[in-house]
Length: 203
Image 1: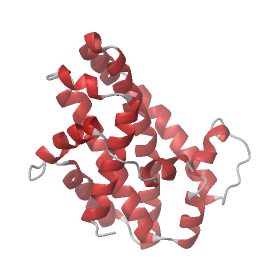
Image 2: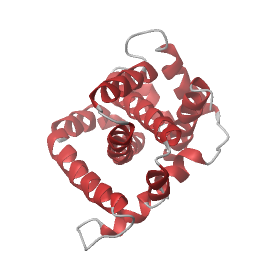
Image 3: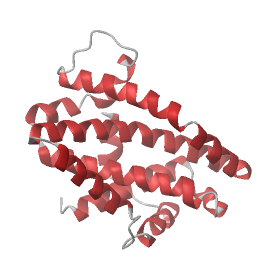
Image 4: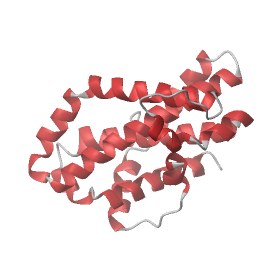
């Protein structure tokens, strides 16, 4: 599946992705550290859930949502790499479109959730062509693999919070970072973030 493949395949870091990781490490110890924010969201979901099965469902839904959102972040950051002179207007436009974007992502997330929880069956929906991206989650949902979902949730949330910080806090104030936003570097950066989460969780 695209989601697991992008995160789980080991990719060797190059200089630019290591430079991006420095941004991430510089936040460690602060309340805005992406891993800390991810842990906080996990604890809130854990408090809301009335059973482990319900918690896994919450985690899975947020995993799919944040994975789709990460794709949007990658697209806008890669566009900024190609058009650094208009980085700030691009960020502003992305921010203005947030409500519409989140509605689109929520609809696709719900379609994927229906597909997964129906064990891969779909009567036909607007997102059938993309169900393959989440197909591998079916087996983990069927097994109720709590460890798998916690790890993937923490990884995807950490990635999303980091991408958000990079886009809204770094790019507008330090456009030199635009030269590091090549798509290949972003994918390596994403992998490095996930590796960090695995190490933190002692996976």
